[in-house]
Amino acid sequence: MVTHKDTISLMLPHLRSILKWFLVFLSLGLSCGAGYLIAQPSSSAVFITEVKTHGNRFFSQREITRILNFQSKRYYSPQVVQSRLIELLEAYRSEGFYFSRVDSLQWLIDSDNNHHFCLHVYLHEGQRLKIREIHIAGNSVFSTPKILQWLQSSPSQPLRKAILEQDFQTILKTYANHGYPLCQVVLDSVVYEPSTEGAKLFIKIVEGPLCRITKIFVSGNKITHTNVITRELRLKPGEP
Image 1: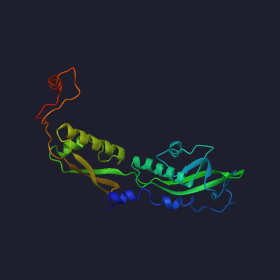
Image 2: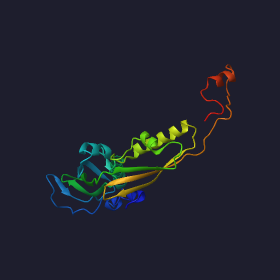
Image 3: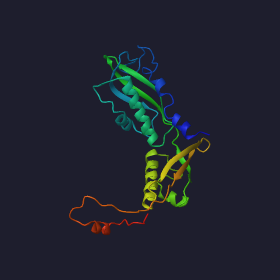
Image 4: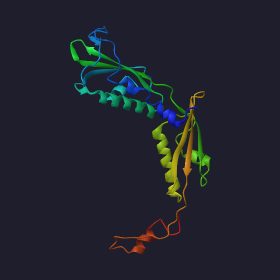
């Protein structure tokens, strides 16, 4: 059984070892297609003329090129290359591919210009993690079935961070509108079960106290009387 922390640790399993100066490449001189040779960059920055990806199915070549954003006629340091690849993995994780990784890189040097490289990125997308169950604890004001109705995240759907964050905001706003502005929502844990290739989400709600309005203060009004302003307010003393 893999916990939430274990899942996070799998996100970037060996990217740094891959990029410790652009991996271990085959020695210069092996042929690899017309006009290119397999090589190891020897300078602190490389001129990337083209990026090609292998193993990608969810994102197209065009989408990955846009994410990596390696513009032509520019030099890139190994640190920038690493950060761009991390951004690519972040894009995969945002779509539920938490086990995606960069398996290897291959640099092909232009035989006519030893400063120009074509970068080949070999990807492993991994299984798309889907929600199997959602468990909610700590709630008493609203029932669990009621809260689940508010959520976009649901069983059989991919586990997407952005959607889950929106769900948490929905819970917080609903509680606040019912007099619980101090409510807190946390993802207590995520349990991944390899046998089902699904994840169980455990959400904890700390509702906090019911807050009521004791008095309303108005300041800055010079023309309109305070009692006129308070009369028009939808908030009244004694209400949540």
